[in-house]
Length: 323
Image (tube, rainbow, N blue to C red; front, side, top):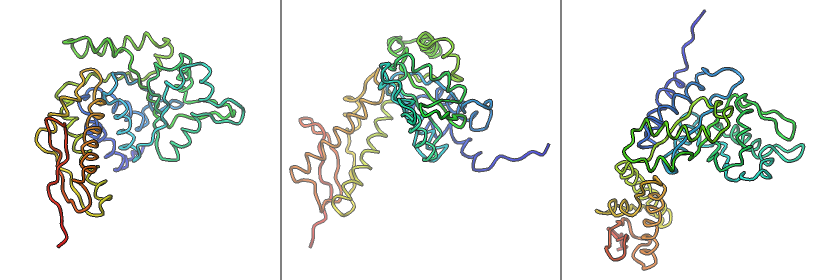
């Protein structure tokens, strides 16, 4: 039989997926390796015909990078962050469930509409977020999804064989957070057992991969804060440049990183509190500087500095005055 080489572009994308995920999400190397393996098996055609490319359960505390990893994978594999994302918490009651597949003949339901938009955007990932918050019957959909088929109220049967179906959950995370000093393998096993107890056995068995994201260590959160600060400074520099009609650069002064880490670090909630603190403090400092007239058109550079009485403040570094 004649062998045929893989397209070079596909090979390069596949080979660099693990690195792309590690660049996007810090401190979760084991989970990202498992996610990459699950996605690549589907991309390369190693899953049985008549099945989704993957059906994976992503477990772990909030703010540890589960959704961010999914979005990074979509960007890398398909060139778009578009995913068909279903917030399971919106379907906590049985009365809400029919909205997913349509409530009357001729309707495509939320799932049908989301998958239509996903394929139009070039994406191939269906994300069911925080499934433990949904009515238990929502999990039954996974039985049909495992067969790569879903029948809508319109009578149409959707083919899901070209999709990765990724499900996230915080199951087991609360207990795992309290298990200080326990080996990572034991933590993963505990979280997996909690998830297995939540789902019916025939549903849990449908997952081809169960991937556990662990709590972020303090040093990882420090690095996340540094990246967030740099990204926020770059964003605000561009925003002020557009607003002022000339280039403007926002610098980060000494002590800003330490100050925000001390305020935003949370041992159990991951990176989300840190993001909230960075955005609130940086934007608050810029608003205050503009209101007092210290920052406006003509100012080319500013710097965030720590004021022990007022927190962060934005100070002018260089202004361009007309001659």
